Length: 369
Image (cartoon, rainbow, N blue to C red; front, side):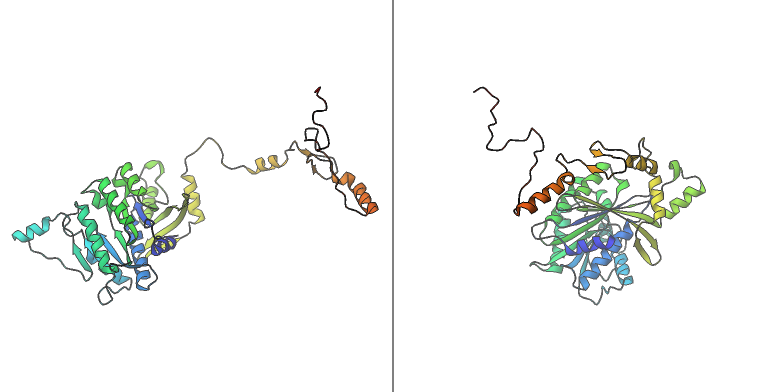
C-alpha cells in the first residue's frame, strides 16, 4: 500500500488536473510519520534518478530538520547528492526561520558556525511571508525542471512548524496554489494533527487527495498509563503502528486501506495487518446494542424459513410458482401436437384475467355504449 502511494505520486496528475497531494498525519501516541515522510522522499528520489518519474527533481521545504540531516539520510540510502547531477534543492526554513540569527551575525553578537551541506540550499529568513516562499519554491523547481514542460515534486517536512508562524487559511492557500501550478507534479507534507484544532486539520486534509495517518496498534485500557501492561503498549506504539490510507478517487468514491508499519535500525517496513492485530483492533471498537453479523444458530434458523412463494410438497421437488401453467404438466401434450402437425406452434397461457386482451376482442363489450 505504501508502495502504491509512492507510485501514484510518481505518476503525477493528468494535464489540466490538480497535482496529487498526500498528507501524512500522526499523534504523540504513535509519532512515526517522519519515518513515512522519509520513505516517500527516498522512493521518489529513486524514481527520479532512474528516469521512471515524470518529475525532474524535488524541492524540499525543510522546517523541522536541517539540510545536513537530509544529506546524511539520502547518503545512507545510497544516493550521491554531491557528484550526481542536481536533482534536489532544499529551502532551508530550519536554520533561521524568522531572520533573527542573521541579524545577530550582522551585528557581531554571535558567530556564524553553520556546518553547511552539500545539497543545493536556499536560506529562507521569513517563513511568515508565504507569498515569497511560494515564489522561492517555484523558482527552485524551474531550475531543476526547466522553463518548459518539465515538472518537479514539492515536499514540506512539517506544516505544523509553518502553522506556528502563520494562519491556517494562508497555509491552505499555499498548498492550493502549489497543487494547481502546471509544473508541480505532486505534493506531500507532514502534519502532527494533535497539535492543532480539528478545523485546522480538516482544512489541510481537504487540500489533499490522499490522507495517510499513523495510528497506534493498541491503546491503554481505560486511558490509564500507570500499570506495566499499558506502559508496554505505549513502548510498542513507538516502534509499530497502523498505517491507514484514505484516497479520494476521480469519480468521487473513497477507498480505505490499512497496513502495519514497523521501525527498526534498518529503517521502516510495511506489512499486511496480522490476524492478532485484527483481534486487538476489533476489541477497540465501541460496544453497540445490536449485532452486525448473524450467529450460526441464526443462519440455520433463517435457512429453515419457508418463503410464501415456495410450494413445499412432501417427498416432491420444490417448485417455485411463476404465475403460469407449469410446463411439466403440459409438456407431453405440447410435444404431441408439434410432432403430429409437423409445424411449429406457439402455445400461450394467459397469466391472469388482468392481462390486456388480444386485438380481436372488444375491451368494452361489457359496456352499454
